[in-house]
Image (tube, rainbow, N blue to C red; front, top):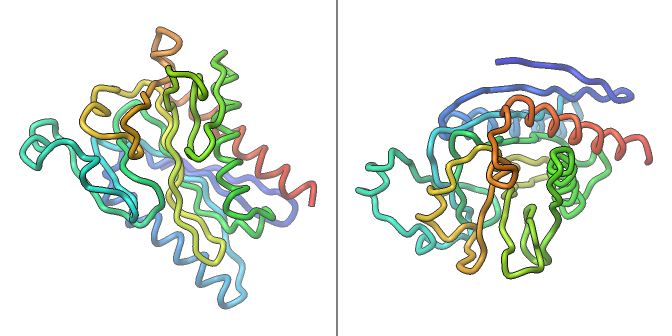
Length: 235
C-alpha cells in the first residue's frame, strides 16, 4: 500500500493506494476509517481525512434503495463470470466494479471542507469531468442522474463514472467508480444504476486506446485534492 500526505492549512489529507483488493476487504477497511472519524468527531479529537484508490476483481454492488431485479443474471451465472454480488449501505442502485476501473473512496469529514452532501457529490463529478478533459474527452452531468456522462442530453448518453456515497455526521464513505480500461461487457448483465435506456462507456473506448491506469489515477487524484483544497481556501 502506497501512502502520501498532503497538508492544507492545519488539516491533513492522506492518499492511500490499496491496489487490487477484494470488495469485501475494502468495504471492511473503509468502514473502520469511517467509524474512526465519527468517533473522533464525537469525542472532539483530531482525525485524518483519507482518499483511498483501489481496483476490484469483478463485483456488482447495489445500494440500500436498489432493486435486485436490476441484476439480470442468477447466482450460477455470477459464478461462471467469476463475479460476486453485495448489498451495501450507500445510495444509488446497482453498479459494476472490475479490473481497469479506478475506484476512489474518500473517507473524509465534509465539514472540514465546508461541504454539504450535494456539494460534495458535485465536487466528485467535477474531478472526473476535469480528468476526462485532461484526456480530450468532454463529459458533463445529467439532471437527476448522479455521475458523469458523455452526450448527457442526447440519445447516445452514456455513463463513464458512477457515484454512490454514504454520509453520517457529515463523514463520507464509498465514492466513485471511473471506467478507464474497464471491460464493459460486464455491464450487459445489469441495468446500470437502474437505467434501462442509457449506455456506459470508458476512457479507453472513447479514445480508441488503453490508458495507463496509474497515470489516470494520478490525474484524478490531483484534481480531487485541488478541488478539496479550494474549498478550504475560499471559506
